[in-house]
Image (tube, rainbow, N blue to C red):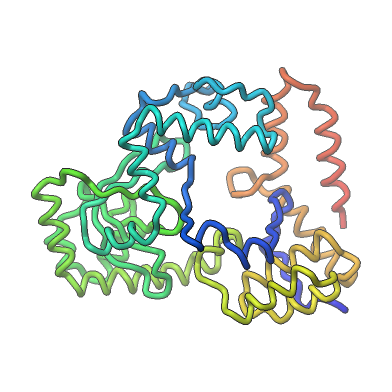
Length: 362
């Protein structure tokens, strides 16, 4: 039995493979009363809003580092086995509790932000809100603004505008072109954010009269909300669906009941049976992830042509420029090993990775 139309466009040789059946059939963070928090984003919010609650390590380039293996030790955690899975979990819990102890009021708000239903309700009630974001290597910053509308095809994607960059009266009279430029331009007058990605949304406790008037004006501007919804939908179709990695698409919608049934079968099926199941998935994300599992674990089920295409693509991924790739490239590996020269004998690791890359020669 052979898998049909193997597509390697999204293969990431360095990423941990996603176990489809277990994670999708029983998503522990979204059902049974559970919610989701991102401790790193909590750390960003702590830096922006209660910086004294944590000590902040400084990297060699003079910038504050948010890396767990540096942040945890300077705050009192004995992080001797950095990057060991269990040690990283313990360090994350340690930082979580430290924020709870030393910034209790902020902590309550951040935990509250983990409830997607409540956050959506607050946003769509047009309450003045704030959210802390970090872009690139810049320091985290808190943005205050108002909900503007949701993507009509993906309600998790919303428009959120900074009070400082907008005037309500201008927006209520905006054309589609104006809204599009506000979303896509720089600076972004309307930011595209996702309510299901654990952003640290908080209701502003003491909003100014200007903030309240701004939000009330937008609330009454139905035409503007429709324009935002339309532009977000078009932007999502043009960019996210075509350019995002498959891991970044997993929050763009739920799987159908037929696929859930197939995923349950997938758990106990043999590899040849899984190939057949993968071909029957309706959701393209599941097909992509399933094909990845086959390519990594049971290449004997691929044709010679498919195996050759697989090796060629993975090699290209390794050799992509470090500035162009959101995944780990060979350049990332060499740079990381250079940083570790003073701590370990990295020559063996260089040989290991170079041999792995060389083995992909077509």
